[in-house]
Length: 94
Image 1 (spheres, rainbow, N blue to C red):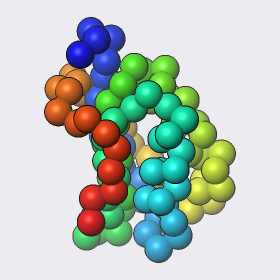
Image 2 (cartoon, rainbow, N blue to C red; image 1 turned 120 degrees about the vertical axis):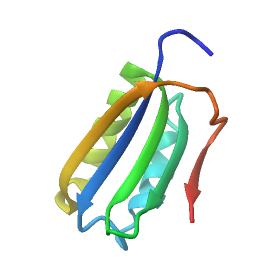
Image 3 (cartoon, helix red, strand yellow; image 1 turned 45 degrees about the vertical axis):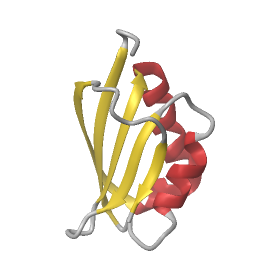
């Protein structure tokens, strides 16, 4: 795993379930060198886990907001952590 790899755990709140949020996340990730997951949480939020270089993560999050989902997002929080390399692809967790 490259030394400049980071992990971001991102939580989105608002009207983020039932609007294609997870599908859009999966579609957009193909344009970036990232691994991770996206899943709905029981409290109505969506959790997005990403690993990759920080510019890739930042670019992905910017494109996600440009995708038309911004109007559904009330709040976004990011928890930066050391990367572990445990994710080998990107998936939707059900």
